[in-house]
Amino acid sequence: MKVRDVMMGTPASCTSETNLAAAVEILWNRNCGILPIVNAQQEVIGVVTDRDICIALGTRNRPAGEIPVSDVASGKVFACQPDDDIRSALVTMGIAKVRRLPVINAKHKLEGILSMDDVVAHSDARTPGKTAELSNEDVVDALRRIYRAELPEVPQKKAATGAC
Image 1 (cartoon, rainbow, N blue to C red):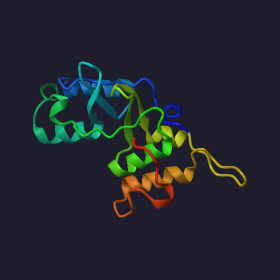
Image 2 (cartoon, helix red, strand yellow):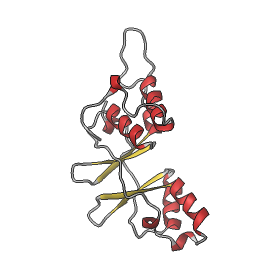
Image 3 (cartoon, helix red, strand yellow):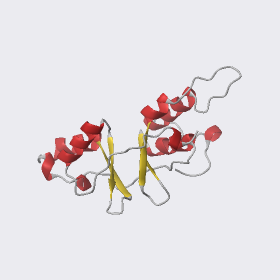
């Protein structure tokens, strides 16, 4: 199964100059928890999450309209590509300890968002004699890597080739 089979393909985004009030409105209207930040060429240069915004507003003592997303966003972008295997994207999520990844093409342009919610919705229980493309066990293993620091980041039996 490929990332493109699971991702949400109409992502919202913002620019680094977008203020937190506008970013919250986008997140609310689009019912999402991550907002990729794009430059003038529509390349992903960062991300801001609902959690980033909440912490910023709770600690900065400034109105949301005065704080640009660039002040609180992560400049380190963990992402995957549409043709990546879904298990490879899950490994990236586990390494980065994130539940959402921007899906970018070879030119670093935003094509979608892959979230654990989407992954869960596309997983299947394993049945005797049938191999699921994406099993519930795959999803649980990924969530364990995301939430529990003591587990290895990339399990030996599921090491993926290629990077997201």
